[in-house]
Amino acid sequence: MPQARPLESPHHFDSYGSTPNPYQSLAAPGWIVTALLVGFAAITAWSIIAGFAQISLVNDLEAGHRVTLGEASAADENYQNANLAQLLVYLFIAAFFIWWLVRATKNVEAFGVRDADYGPGWAMGGWFIPILNFWRPLQVVNQAWRASASHLPGFSGEDYRGLDVSPLLYVWWISFCVISVVGNGLDSATENAESLGDLRGALQFGIASDIAFLALTAMTIVVVRRLTSRHGIAARSLEQVMTQR
Image (cartoon, rainbow, N blue to C red; front, side, top):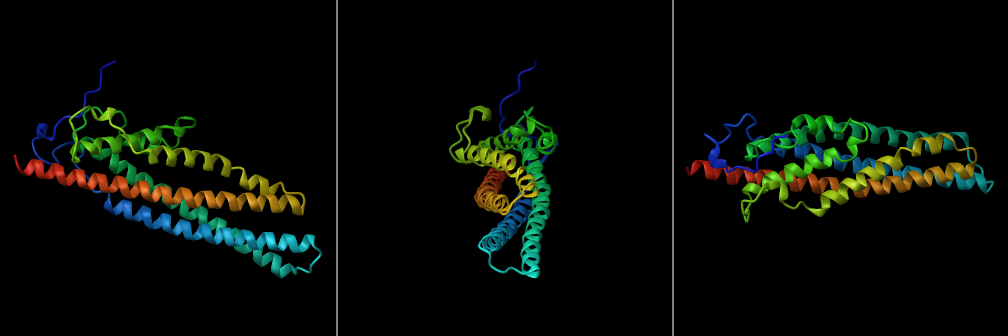
């Protein structure tokens, strides 16, 4: 198997942006993803409030207090609408996040990496291959993070693959995997509830899941903003090098 070559200097390029994948700004997709994540956080807060309202009704029923059908239906509809809104915004986040990551992966070559380990195809397809999707997307993000370091202040010229990445990336990814796996059991827990106690437990589980998603959303915003910033700084540094030739 041929060995992948290390990061090459931008001076190997004929001109700035002359590579098959010239630099593409992450600003637009980055801000769209950020805005969607903020919207998702707001909807998740709505879901948490709706969940507590549902639990309050369950407690009233158990205590023998009068709860009208209209009150129960309104509370349930509010909770279901919040969950549906979460799902729809989540799908938009997934689409735009992949767009952002594909651009970041294309920039790896623009920053001088030859024979990168993961191309744009992995930035998209790595999410959809069972089992492999537990680590391949993180490897793609790590590659985009390391490659941008070649044009940041303090770079010493070593192979980019040996560069460290922020511990935040690992915390973010492990959190994403755990929350995604655990969250998949929420619907079944709600559907299989056979008593008011079961329903309250499912609602409490949903609230805990939403709180975890809020933390994950905040970490995702930080990851997107930091990697977008790194690529922007690296691109400006690279452009200065090329214009000074």
